Image (cartoon, rainbow, N blue to C red; front, side, top):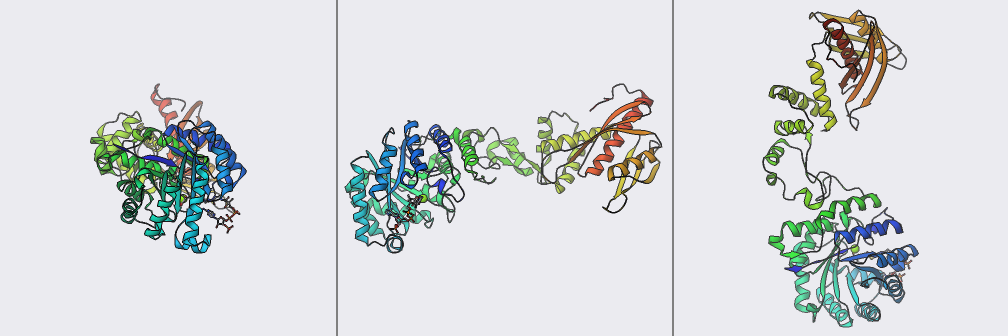
Length: 514
Ligand SMILES: CC(=O)SCCNC(=O)CCNC(=O)[C@H](O)C(C)(C)COP(=O)(O)OP(=O)(O)OC[C@H]1O[C@@H](n2cnc3c(N)ncnc32)[C@H](O)[C@@H]1OP(=O)(O)O
Ligand SMILES: CC(C)C(=O)C(=O)O
Ligand SMILES: [Mg+2]
């Protein structure tokens, strides 16, 4: 099977992402991980561009031994000299020299004629060949270059000693069919093209970088350039992890192999994201947090019955521990039941059905329900199951910075009677507790009150723990609700109910602490 080389430019083109700046240590750490990932070539930087880049490239070239390390240079002696100095101690020093070939770049940027660009490119390659065993030459903006001219300059640089010819889509302009045609054209119109490796370097301005890279492979490219997570100048480069996994999953179609150790992908992505500060969108293919998450009931049911119904990539293949069934408003009973079991609850069907209804109601209010939310739901259900004396029917709190907080509570008593009271307090919680005390006609002392968010986010459930003394008995109670005041009321009622139960029914098995 034909082998395709992977050329990673996370540390060069990737670092050209607006706002990204990696120091030497960070670059080295990423380079080592790229080596573990099985990259064939690492473009470690642009040595002539700054002292920092020079020393980073040098250190990476000296450290990384299992892949070829390269550095970028313009077609000027100074850049090539700097690259040689930085790379000469590497295991396979390789130069990446480039010049723009498109009419727009020739005319406006370089201010050179067609012939001057060719002369410049040839001289640069000839000069570099004195030092470097391997030279990659790139036609910047190749995809907006006249094809006969592109073929002409490629032929000349091959003659001058280039070993790899890169056809970049510098501005992300091309589409897969057109890109394939460029490779075909060069194969048919350039002398000695079969003596070099053709390379693809795609940008994602129109969202086609990965598709274009795959098309290049179909049309003879032996090397693919890109970055981890697709970071890079403007909209970024082709995401190498996507190309690698596409080649693996669709081996039947592409029929090529690579050195990439797919199980290192997630780790590499996480590291690059952490060190560059470029956050991976949740829906990003392969490495996004949602890439292996199923939210809708029908999909979850399918995946539970047979993973391949909705998973073409196994998460473990790319180093993700497991897929996940995210419970939200689109989820169904199958996934709900499995999740509860995973959390250690063995519940009767009836309880599950009851909980599922509550879960659906809650999921209307909350985007995603976390495991903590589910535990809270079950515990809440279990609290309800206790044969308590009081049950909260309704709660109304009046609070304003200028007024006195007032609470109105309706409770159902042990005999089914409805109790309604109102009272004030220094704060809303105190007003609620004063009102409850009045409803319950007991002397209750609040000993402890703790509140915590059950998960993260604005819509997290509130969990309140209280400790009360009813007569001489101390008892803990817990309440969970979306609103902190409702959770506070529930916790208080729960504690009192437990104290009463313990006192009058001698339920020894009731826990006194929570
Ligand atoms: C498509 C790409 O990603 S190419 C790589 C882009 N990466 C970078 O530019 C990052 C690093 N760059 C830098 O640090 C700086 O641009 C440097 C150090 C390379 C050059 O800085 P300066 O000398 O101040 O030049 P500046 O960047 O303003 O302009 C670039 C010059 O290089 C010329 N140039 C651009 N590409 C090439 C090339 N391949 N070969 C020769 N000259 C080139 C431009 O025409 C311009 O020349 P001019 O000064 O005669 O007009
Ligand atoms: C330097 C070249 C290869 C480049 O990054 C581009 O053209 O996008
Ligand atoms: Mg680029």
